[in-house]
Length: 329
Ligand code: UFG
View 1 (cartoon, rainbow, N blue to C red):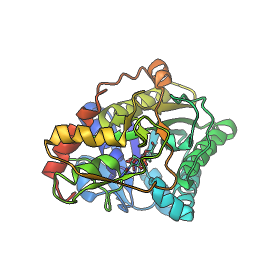
View 2: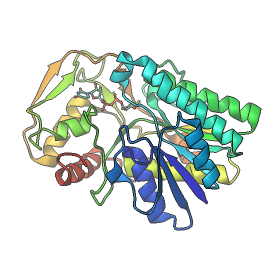
View 3: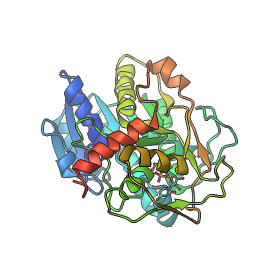
C-alpha cells in the first residue's frame, strides 16, 4: 500500500519512514515536509519526497493526485508547549488550519484513513495518577488545545463524511534509531533528554530544572518517557487496524511509569558517566506536574507490546545518536 507520511523529515516522522522501509517491503512511502523543523538528512533515500507545506492546498492536492494514497500518517505540527504559550496563533494556524486543509484535500481525493500524532498535552493538569483515554481533557496550553481540536475535526469527518482515524496521544518520546543515524535534533533544543545530554557533549555547562515546587515526590515534574521504536510500532499497528476495518479511536502511548526531571538527570549521569550539573530555576508556563499514561487500550485493541520499559535504554539510545551527531544533522 502507499503510505503518505506528513512530517516525514522530523524526529518522529523520520523514524516512522525508516521503519516502514526496513520492515514492510510491500509498502511505499511518500513524504511531505516543509523542512521548517525537519531535516533533509533525515529523509530516507528510498522514500519519495515532496518539499512543501500542508497549508498549501494546491501543493497538497498535487501530491494526492500524483500518488494513489491509501492511508495518511500525520506528524506535521508545531509541538512545543512553552513556545505555544508565546505564539498561540502560530499553533492554531499550523496545526488546526493545517489539519483543515489536509482533511479537505483527503476528502476531495477520497482518501479517508488517517493515523494522527496527538499528545498527552490534550489532558492538561489531571487529578489522577495514571491517565486513561477516558480521563477528561483540559489542555493547559494552546499546543494541547490545538491537538484536541484536530482530534475533534477528525471525529466529525468520521461522523459526517465516513473518515476513519486513529489518534495516538504520545507521552514523552525519547531515544533514537538503533543505527544512530537518525534521532532527535531540534534547534534550539527544548526537550529534556537531549538538553541533559548536551552537558556531557560539552555544549552546555548545566541543565536548568524548571521548578522544584511541584506536588511530586521530589518537587520536579514527572513524565512518562516512551522509546521511539515502541512508539512507531504502535503507528504501524494503527495503519493495519484501519486497513482491516477498525473503527475510529484514540489511544495513549506511554509506559505507565513516570520519571521526574531529577531522576532523568541522575540516569543520564550513569549512562554517560559524566557529572551532569543542574540548577533549579522557575517553572516553565504551561507545564503540568505529572503525566503518566495507561496504555491498556492500545495493548488490547492494537495488540501493542512495549519492548523498552527502562528509561535508561532510551537515554542510551539517544546518547548513541548524539555522540555520532554532536551538532545535529
Ligand atoms: N525540563 C526542564 N529543563 C529543561 C527542559 C525541560 O526542567 O531544560 C522539564 C520540563 O519543564 C518538563 C520536563 O522536563 O517538566 C519534560 O519537558 P520536555 O520539554 O522534554 O517535554 P514536555 O513534557 O514539555 O512535552 C513533551 C512534548 C509535547 C507533549 C508532551 C506530553 O514536547 O509535545 O511531552 O507530555 F505534549
